[in-house]
Image 1 (cartoon, rainbow, N blue to C red):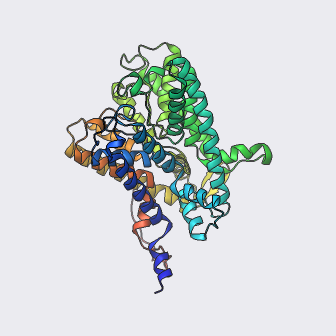
Image 2 (image 1 turned 30 degrees about the horizontal axis):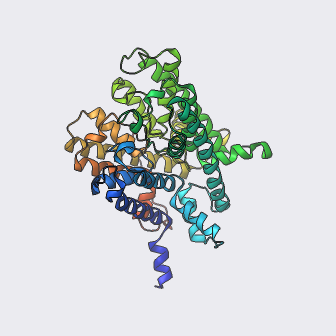
Image 3 (image 1 turned 135 degrees about the horizontal axis):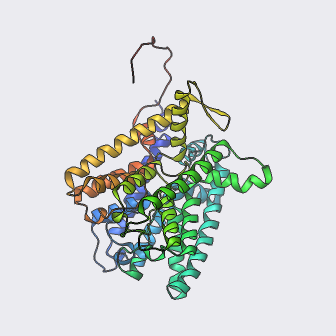
Length: 453
């Protein structure tokens, strides 16, 4: 076999994504281990550095040390760069550099971009990359300006620090990472809780999470709608399902927590509504919270686990099984109950292989969460709800926690690191990377009968 043939077999698009994220995490770990990355000048240690680098590169937001107080400006900058590259994709950044240098994008690179962006075809994938960069930059700049102005007036921060905080939180929230610096202002791990009833902050933060979570394909469709006057099936499914989950989720959280003295109880009516909506939006993979997650009723915590499991849209900065997968599962159930062979969404028939892929992805994801929840149950002395919540948050790259993260044992940190990595890649991408090239069998097996139900 020629060297080129071996290269094609060894470096498939899924494998490039798998190893690309590993290299990025390794580089981040080395930088965060340096004493210069620590606020005290003493290294935070390789395991904590690995955990933080993985959380940042996989845009999760779970932290074993407070970002605002434990890291120097250098360390915070490393985390932010990992978040930015991990959010929009290292292949997107590599393509941007190649375009700037006027280099040609090869077919193999286009295939990797197609895999990374969850694009249906390689046709137009380079144009999509350009849009990803442009949309990300515009949204992050707008978010940074709005937040910086508000920090000056609400927290009386100096303009320079307000701009730094604005840029940091805008990039972090748009990429659905959830790293924040508010601990350095209001005490460790206070996060965004002081803004729970602030309409301006709620709207800006939810908008950043929403825009990062619906995906770049949907953003492109929305911006081009006034010109073409049509929207793709994918965008219709994402927007309608997201709206339903956000508002129904907010309503359920409101009803279950309205009188809880540890969460919504002390707030006025407006604060209760904003807090309920924010907690519903942040489960899309946002990573920040404005109420104490550990103080929620168990029913609410479990409901949030379900929302985190569903996650954001394909081709976005968020995680989870993806909202389109969830809609396809509901469509398959509906078709089966109605006795129909095809799944139909917005009067469009969905190919059966796409439905099978959705079922496979969901089952693999459930098995992964169960496996790592069992491993955490062995190594961590905590109640199972906290462990299950942590597992779902890590897999969904959501980043909200009931407080278990900071108390994880070394083994527990390793399990969560693995789960964040697997959640960012997606179980199917990893499965494709570990298996040989899939080829259709040249024959059909005889049909068999099996009883179910």
